[in-house]
Length: 347
Ligand code: GYE
Image (cartoon, rainbow, N blue to C red; front, side):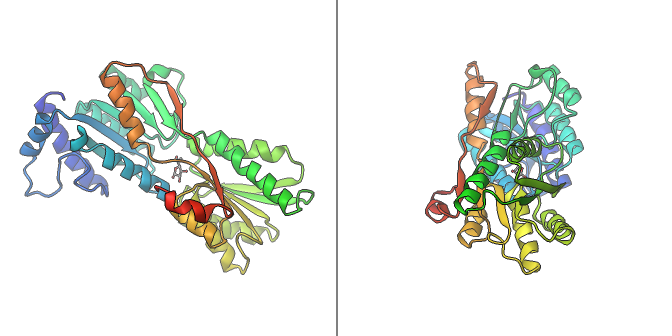
């Protein structure tokens, strides 16, 4: 929407960023910049300008999980020229410093909006102050930030992570009761997400609060698995070496749970029976795992924020007010309803 010059600059920078970061963004859904050196940048930029598209820079966390992949796809299919948008996508590979660089690039390109899914909660004052000084609204999606000045962002939309953590243990309480194990001492280990990410902070808080309410629970150990399958498996292997009586694994996302399940099978134990698996996200593969009897439960966390952010931008374009904090409704799925629900799942 801004000057052609800035778009041209944007296209050039976006092309550089995409190739520089090795981003997996398909050309069709990213900025009309192509890493193909035969494709001239200028016509693509003016095409975007002719259509009067709204230019959105998305500073994404990375590609660490199925949830994240679904989230990226949601943005890349929503913010397309046919819907009136040009998306400049940046994959920060789980590093805050990369996100800060991406935001500075977006500011230099004079994008219309910046969307940020912050890797961690703290350390955003300076760069978001720069976005504010440039007059570019910042919409937070997925994870939260911890800043004293809430004018540094326009609004936030995402999951209620504390509630998700509580829901996971509530499910466990009911399950153990139904199994006649509610008076048994239960040993728990927890695989945490990226330390300092609000999804980790909230889920840890919610889980620990609920575990403390029941003296039968003993949290043996918690450690980060960085929200990845590989690290989840690695940490679970070390837990299994250290403790021979683990009753429950609480994995703060499905991918770490998949890794834990592999580690449990490798020592000859049966996941879903010998060790109860409580997980988060409820991605497609989690439903398959529940149907197979491996995973016991997955607390939903909905990644399809693209349309939600588009709705916010449309309101802002019309000068309408938007809610500062918007939680998405989420459910809990387990082995009793996984098969029935699987065909309805969108991610
Ligand atoms: O649970 C995990 C992803 O921030 C809610 O990030 C998101 C989390 C999600 O890597 O799978």
